[in-house]
Image (cartoon, rainbow, N blue to C red; front, side, top):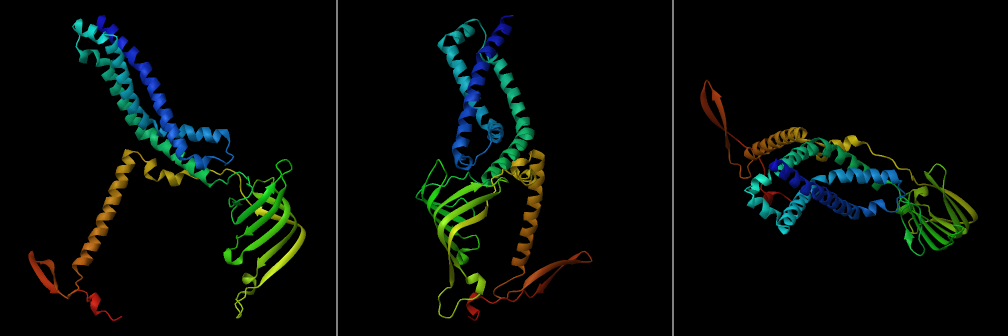
Amino acid sequence: MIIKRLYRFMLKSFLPLFLMTFFICLFIVLMQFLWRYIDDLVGKGLEVHVIGELFFYAALTMVPMALPLAILLASLMTFGNLGERFELTAIKASGISLMKAMKPLVIFIALVAVGAFFFQNYVLPVAQTKMWTLLYSVRQKSPELEIPEGVFYDQIPGYNFYVEKKDRESGTLYDMMIYDVSRGFENSRIILADSGHLKLADDKQHLFLQLYSGEQFENLKENNGATPRSGNQPYRRESFDLKEILLAFDTNFNRMDESGMRNQYVGKNIEELRATIDSVTQRVDSVGAIYARELKETAYLRVPYYHTDYVDGERVETAQQPVAMDRPENIDS
């Protein structure tokens, strides 16, 4: 009866500390993940459920890192508290050895180790596949449209925007300079405008740009196909009072296919990793055998090599002339 009470007491002292330290360690490593990929998440206009899903899968992938730290910290805190309150001394004075008192904790940690193995073998590959697929999908999403003042903005594919001043209430942009390099730098186009408006289309895949009182300079190299003998590059100058441009800018969140990430090592369990290692090893061995045979049959100094064969059970070696290759210093330049 005393032993059962002691076992319950040890588990009651260890389990709350273990759960507390586990979630604290998981939170710390999750914050490390957040600071590492914060640039890929900020400014993308992602919905809350997408960020929550990414953090959930990231937390599952961080469990193997947080679990050993939690066990270590919980063990230190548990036995430190027992020693500070002289409870370990009372246990030893009652004739119970320390190993016997630690028996329930040893059994519990053994069960945790077995569960951690199955978790990493079956749950972790799925979680890593979903996390990396979602993270790469977030990286490919276009950022929110927020053009700053006084600097070039290059987050719109194929265009560089420069705005001297903007009215945040009306959304009007003043003293605009636009470099259109969507057709390449050699066929670039420069647009200057006194003011303009930039809005997102209803389909969330295009930007509607309205420019007022400006000029457009366009390179004509693509149109005439050749550069004049004089070396001067022709261009076209256009003045306008109102100009409307439709720009491709996909702001929708598109998920990538998980099949490509599932074929990577992060999406495979032990059996699949072993099969991959065997196939890669066989491929490397076959390539190495080909290179070894080529090195054996090739000589720089025209020294013959001997080919071994078996005729009627007897070993026969025949001298063969190697592939003729000149030494580097004998090659005509």
